[in-house]
Length: 129
Image 1 (spheres, helix red, strand yellow):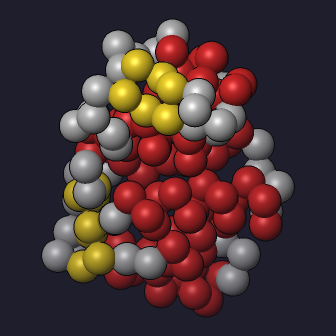
Image 2: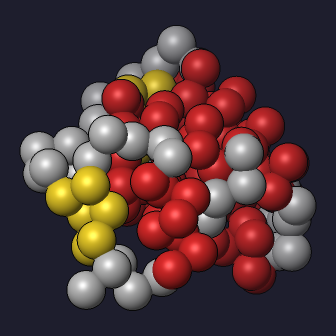
């Protein structure tokens, strides 16, 4: 199994550098691939801010990526939950933080907008300290 960095995913998803995209595709096809949560988080951020790709296209790309048979995700349950919340309009980083916090019974944030939305998504108590 090969773990990949964000730049591998970005090359595959954007094909902005054809030579690197080809090399990245060969790598992804050659073995089982492990993708850490941090790489998914950074990939969404890079696609949104550096490439100005829409939320809908990012969602579709991540959903396709997560469904490939040779892809193994760190904490797939949290990533799946975060992606479903992202699909309904929440910030991906916020959703991943919340989805990854299931060991806790409370979640604290100063982000009032996120707190209000989060309180409707989970049984976890959302605190605004």
